[in-house]
Image (cartoon, rainbow, N blue to C red; front, side):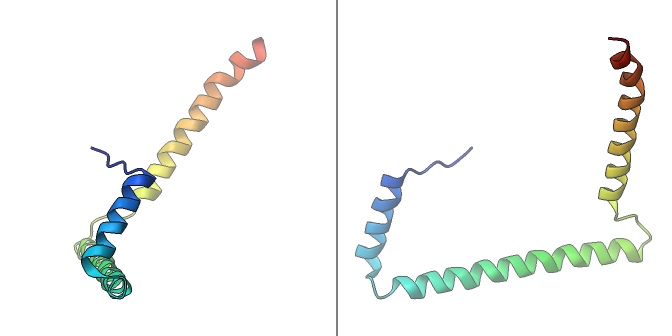
Length: 90
């Protein structure tokens, strides 16, 4: 489900925020939200690194993207090989 908010709705939300918290508290709230988002991002990256490190310690292959790129390249080459003679005939 997508969340679509128009410009008018954003304006109304901002007006309510200013009325509830006051104009002098908004920078403090924004700063707190920014710090919270940064901590969440750092925690997420730390979890990713721990999972990758654990997988590498157990001998699991973590380079999935490289394998996918190789397969995509192989498929493209196969398509080029098959379509090459067909394109030349016309």
